[in-house]
Amino acid sequence: MSESRTEEFMERFRVLIRITDLSQRLADPLKEVMTELLETSCTRLKAAGASILVRKEDSGALTFLAATGEVADQVIGLEVPAGKGIAGFVLMSGQPMAISQPDDESGFYAEVDKATGFSTEHILAIPLRFRNDIIGVLEYVNRAADAPSEAFTAAEMDVATVYAESVAALVNAFFEGDLLYDLSSRVANTEEERREVQTWLRSIRDVSSHGRALEIAALINELASMGDAEIELCRKVLESIIAYSRSNLSGLEFTDE
Image (cartoon, rainbow, N blue to C red; front, side):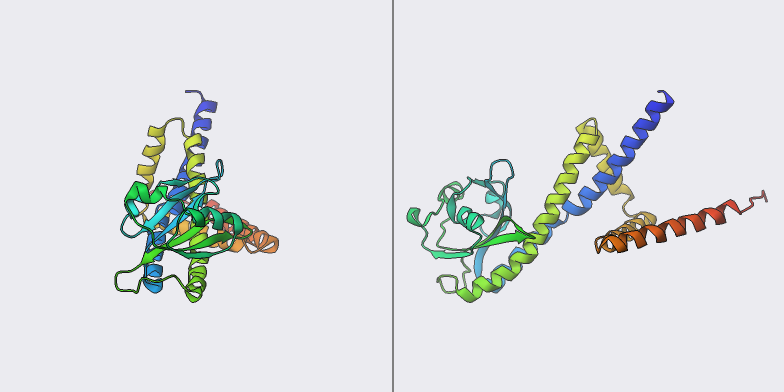
């Protein structure tokens, strides 16, 4: 392999490592956190189950990203067509909605119940807002076994709205990780190559220096997000540290003992 092609390969490999590592660290734990948050909020709202539906950019349909409850495993990955169902209405209107005994007249999309064998009696749906966009819907269904079977209240809607803020932030982070994952797939020539890099990254994550480097990167990212002045300060500090380290290294004399 020529020197130029070797350098091109190494640069592509370095980019792939950076992107893959970031994508995994963003996306891998997020679904677990989402599920834990759903379980916690279900307990608070005395709901039997909950789900997070996210909007697909190409079709506008809503896809179940995470869920908890009786049919959680069955609903993940299912789609609600654009504009359909209570969730579709909440996505388009940006308004929360609570309804009992949903039917066709209320706009209920019954296909999910048909696919899972579940029977929806009560729904509380809250839009997921991130910055100025509505990126999905947080939905609670039915009442827990130890709770009265009654409609979700206005007070519970307010509580669910607070949870929705945290959920929206998690969903946005997941999307960013997903975008990085797609980018890593494009950088890699083959799916096998990408998987090999992922496996290698997992094997080195326990190395202390790798962990410290990621902690520093996270701190720099947080500082840089504060504004232009902070970015410039961050750049100058890093350049000063690097220059200092290089000058010290160049002054060292190595001798054989």
